[in-house]
Image 1 (cartoon, rainbow, N blue to C red):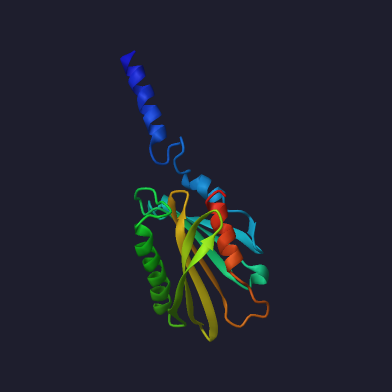
Image 2: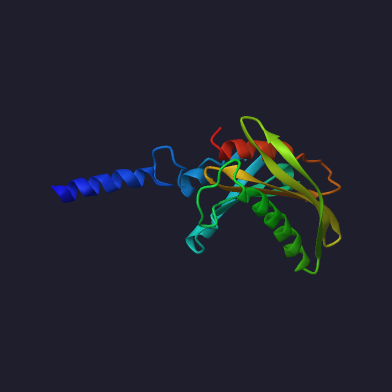
Length: 188
């Protein structure tokens, strides 16, 4: 009888642990399911589940902008650490790391260059703002602009990267997508 009570108590406590229920962050699968099929003209594509091979790396979901005038990647991950909150001090370092990663990745490819421009906070109605940086560069001979934003959602880091040509036939404003996808990821 004591063993059954102990198992029941352990199950109840597990429900209170991060990722377990009772008001905690949703599972990664549930958090990814919050990302809608369409936001501000961007259509959802495939998902890559990094978490399965590299715990803490989460999931990345691809989006294509209107008439493929822009592409976006939305990532949810926790680096196998404690849940990330809206005012978590780790957000600043993670944002700088995310921007540096995009710049350095472009530098490893012979046909790409990327340089950081202005940083700003982007307000998100109903929640904490996102930190965003605008990057300018080239892919081959094509001048491009990339917006990298980072904040928190569902107890994880939420990273959004939107890339589009600088001279577009049909200009795409990435901000409605960034705000809309953030609200969806936060369950708003």
